Amino acid sequence: MADLSVNICGIESPNPFWLASAPPTNTGDQIARAFDAGWGGAVWKTLGEPIENVYSRYSSVDINGSRMMGLNNIELITDRSLEVNLIEIEEVKRRYPDNVVIVSLMVESDPDAWDTIIKQVEQAGADGIELNFGCPHGMSERGMGSAVGQVPEYTCDITTWAKSSATTPVFVKLTPNITDIRYAARAAKDGGADAVSLINTINSITGVDLDSFTPRPVVGNMSSHGGYCGPAVKPIALNMVASIAADPETADLPISGIGGIETWQDAAEYLLLGATTVQVCTAVMHYGYRIVEGMHEGLSNYLDEKGLSSVDELRGKSVERVTTWENLDINFVHKAEIDQEKCIGCALCYIACEDGAHQAIGSKPTEDGKTEVWIKYDDCVGCNLCSLVCPVKDCITMVPQEVGATSMTWVEYSSDNPPGELYPRPKHGLTIGG
Image (cartoon, rainbow, N blue to C red; front, top):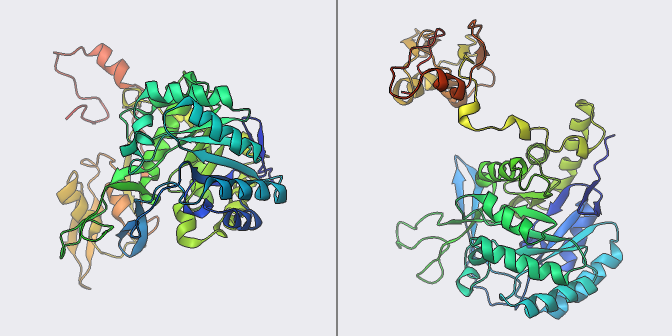
């Protein structure tokens, strides 16, 4: 079996599956049960000056019967005393010396405050610390959380303070509520960060009660913006992880990936885009700690199938396959094909293409009340929409075409056709621009 152990910033973890700083890591008992279930590490729920939470805290977005595709929360950092947390950190590390305990921290922007709490959690046995620069609600109004993470200079300064005090690795948890995540990652690195964690939650309002007119979650007769997480944010998180892994200024900065991870496949995607570990929150809040069992088995089997002996051999393999649009091959052509034996005649592909894409599917009613559909190959631009809406697996596939043209990027094409000239239609029939 493949080796699932990983090393991040000198910290050995039995596997890449960690719990994110969140309600599932609120107490020592929870983290102990998680380690018993098979999690390799956990990031302790953010410590600082204990706060008072409201009772109504979560709301969700459900899609086509799937619950909690997106989860919104207005919960803040720990409401338990620092003294109690420190005792529990020490006990967990005593019982589980081979598992990783990272402690998330958030205090006021004062170097003495950071120095004090860092020394306390390290003395309790923490393997590393995570600076929470990401919370978009509650704490940010107090000058912490995303109020720090959205300003690269603040990120750099506080990271520098933390590094001057810490003897263990310092992770910086980045906010996605920023135009370009690379600037925050560069600032963390400039401050001496050993690694970055991302993404924290996205600023959000998940919906409004149409009877009371109050957004959710409802607190009395009011609400507030909160942090959005769960499967719905995974595409955003993957892009940000890839951006940091591909940036020459941060490519050597270890990454702990966060956002919408429920399965081993999700985890593998993060690893392929440059993450060393992954952190899970919403899926555990939904299904419990034991989901890690499937993650172990699935990732191990996948590595075996690919002929890879360790997670390290998988990490970053997809980074070089991410580029900017102008470097894509405009001479690549693929078109849709329909397997008529699998087609159920629902006409979803026809409706989607006719009303929402390029009118490249023909249709006619059949005697049994269904619809026969076919591809108009001369009109098909290979946009993929029909294959995405089709409810039958592998009924519509996208098939590469032989076009007799060599690979060409937009940069190469535009250098031969300067702006101001009428761009000729390429021989393979694609329209450039338009």
